[in-house]
Image (cartoon, rainbow, N blue to C red; front, top):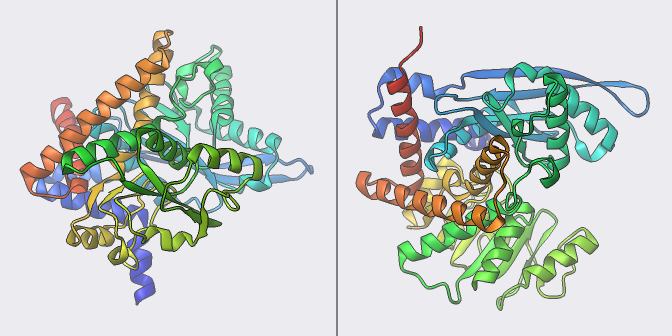
Length: 421
């Protein structure tokens, strides 16, 4: 029975649905809107034939889920991984709707994925798969319809292939069909660091709200990919003490602080954070439960569950990853009076910078990095204030407040637009 309940707990679609239902109930959302917003507007499944390097043909399964177009085009990443599921993509698409609404940018949510193991595929195979996946979805994509972005195991190069494939079908160059592109193809300055920068801004705002000092503030970061590494480096530069880094293959700990810049250089040379001389080796699972002021889960879903939530000792949990805390774990953390900056707010720096890239592409005019960062920080700080004020006004925690605020904004748009029939 325990296994079944844990499986239910860590199902991402069930997790977001539980939070949506609770927030909708708090809002007294009418039944029709409840039904409309609870389900995605469109789910597309494609089967992608790809000529492999050895002459064989492999068929990959791909998904694109579009949750909402009420406030604007769909927006959301594409991930390549062997464990991609439709439930996961559904959940991530709905989270994107709420994430865009909570920072008040004019997008709805979408997400895509292909079941594959990119580590076992050549560049040529990945390119052919990407282009065929794009071609299968061509009628559903576009600057005014659905704008993909990078996600797990996808990057600037994958976005360039998607942009080129779409442009060839349209018979004109359309840079604004994707974000997260290389700068030379219409990418935005500051985009790569934006999610990590947003985490740093949220931690600043949380300390200010809780009236806690930054000096001596100990931070543990779980995940040292793009989000975690940039968040750690930017926070170190602001004066935070990065005492722990946890990765899949092991962790590092130094109570006096880890030099993140040197650690990044070490990982570039060695392909791992292990063996870094500026810190001692540590168990990654144990680091999640170590003493610190701020814990940043910045890797994957479901790392804080009913099985370890009661051992979390952080004062603040700032969620760099999507869905790192289960709904059951939320209640345990609330009982411990841990201040949560929820994922749909905490990691919204990425989609906010993607919005900036889309705007710049459509204008054909590109901003200085300082302008991108200034506008990003302004939107995120304002959104943090909106959420904590909502939490206070409705006597709910920050996560439910973020959901309520987002759902309220989307529902308001739908009421004003009406239901087309």
